Length: 353
Ligand code: ATP
Image 1 (tube, protein in one colour):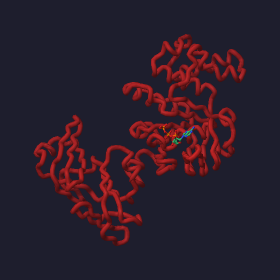
Image 2 (cartoon, helix red, strand yellow):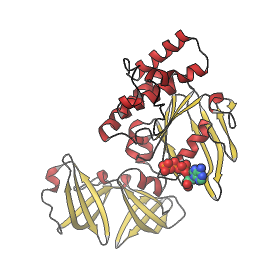
Image 3 (cartoon, helix red, strand yellow):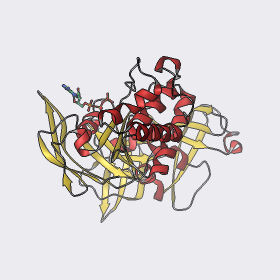
Image 4 (cartoon, protein in one colour):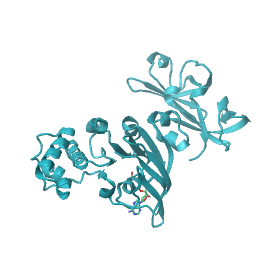
């Protein structure tokens, strides 16, 4: 187990600046996720922490030790690759035992440790099978057992669920969480799937073109995105371009189309802003400290346990999500609709994208 600090890490590949000075603090024993779209620098960050690649500048600390230019094994980091990279000609036992054999551990100790690792990933009894005789989920478990058997200080997982079908993804997601909790090991997890990141992580760093835009618990990031990019990346949300037309301290009046929203809170400099409202925070009934918007119903989409009403306010589409069927029963496409939302649930951020 280890606490990891990245201090101003820069990495370039030719003309491409993959990491533009990243600083991060991953706490001892937490499951920390790097989340972001393709090409934002997640894998590069992971490889640099793993010791498989080295930064142009900046430093990496594992606890009080600087490890920037140490190899993976010297720093005690193990990476599980997306495609598991199992050796096809070796049995499950030999795959898992490999790292221990290299360390020249005594035979009985190797057997004890492999048994422990296979128990941990629930693959006891599979020792003699070959990778081709295993399902995708089982192969993944072998890869995790092989990584954990050497007792790394940090386990790094690069999109570990991307080769699995939807049902297995959910199962393995819980398994990874269970194993991490059981061992109390520091895990760095990489994904581009925000739902996966929310479900599994203690904390998440949202990355965008070589920078970290926000670090926080899934709840903090979802409820309180600090940038337009983070807001739009974390789940379905309404991001409405608007303009600040009046200010009084941190209270502002914001305008979009012909709608003026008063009494919102905003502390940024730019008058070009976006209004961020989560669909589930919009009500079809009046709310306390609320604003209201009246427009036309564009679409009503029934999803079973909730319904989405897509309203048109001028040219702007706004999605409301409600679990109360009766609230939508009187609505008709092209008919009038009024959306209500508490000022506490409206976030105003500088326009960025
Ligand atoms: P993905 O989710 O697609 O794996 P990512 O967020 O992990 O993306 P990286 O693989 O870290 O992103 O890549 C960051 C940037 O650096 C991209 O622009 C990528 O093209 C570039 N890059 C990464 N590795 C190399 C390399 N070996 N040579 C050249 N460019 C690279």
